[in-house]
Every structure is written in structure tokens, then in C-alpha cells.
Length: 65
Image (cartoon, rainbow, N blue to C red; front, side):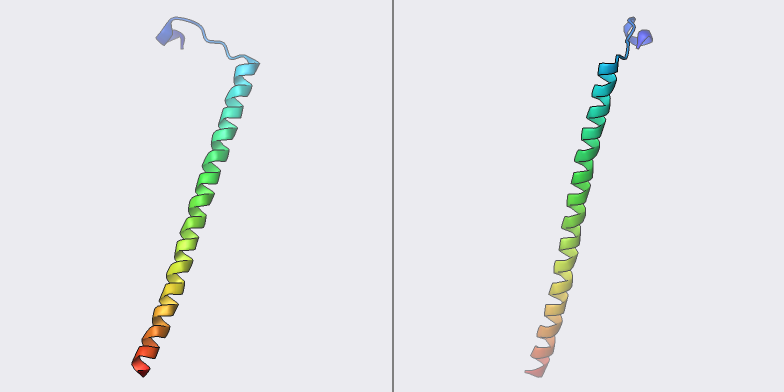
């Protein structure tokens, strides 16, 4: 910081705790986002599997007709 702004920058306990709180919040937000995306992906795969089964049953019924 000194080389760029020509002033000293001191890390106080309060600013350090604020940094940790911000990191914790961002980590929590990202974890929730990833968890949500995983759930959506799994839900989509379940729907694809169900659709494949339904199409298979319809195909068998159509062949019987």
C-alpha cells in the first residue's frame, strides 16, 4: 500500500474481524448458490429419467396397438 498510495495502512483488529465476517458471508453465499445449483441439476436428471421411462412405456403400448 505504501508504494502505491504513499501512505501507511494499518490493519486494526476491527478491520480484520470485518474482513473475516465478509469472507464468512461470501463463503456462505457461494455455498448456498452451489447447493442450489446441484439440487436443480439433480432435479433435472430425475425428470429426464422419468421421461425416458414414460417414453419407453408409451413405445411398448404403441407397438402392442
